[in-house]
Image (cartoon, rainbow, N blue to C red):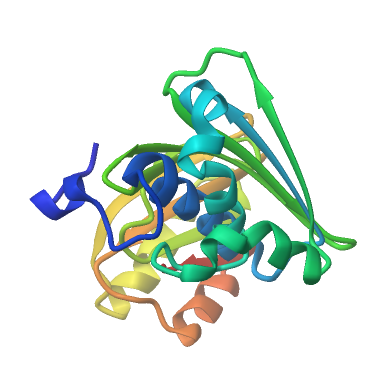
Length: 220
């Protein structure tokens, strides 16, 4: 668990009774929104474990929807997120599951519209901090505490070196890197946490590397 100070344990400035069940849930929703890149038409949310049992009392449901609407944890509109989503034309489908998960505060979120969809599994680890364990079928353990570069590419020799070369040339330091693939030789997803933000020019330079399908940057 990636705690850097006592303030990570206390939790962020927030609306709601629980840093893990409210602020953490909102942050999982907001990561999903940032990765989707725009407001979705539909949000399918499944709660597991403690989330499934206590989401109404702790506001995990309204918090998750608020995150999907791109609201901060301190946004006073959080409590009205369901009605706001309805006004904006976003359908929300919330279900719970008895399936046992590795972490008790687990949520699966699928966002979609007519052109695109993403699906992720996130866990709230306390103090408002989260980890994303799965993204579109790729397994990870990402906190998105720093700017995170996501590179979807063909699984072949030299891809990591090619991306690292661009970052080195622009003096961008890598704090953490993880690569996941569905199977050998298929598509792979490279996740790189950096110590500084990555400019649009650098993203485009990486995008031009052969055998790369998509490049995005998530910074909350």
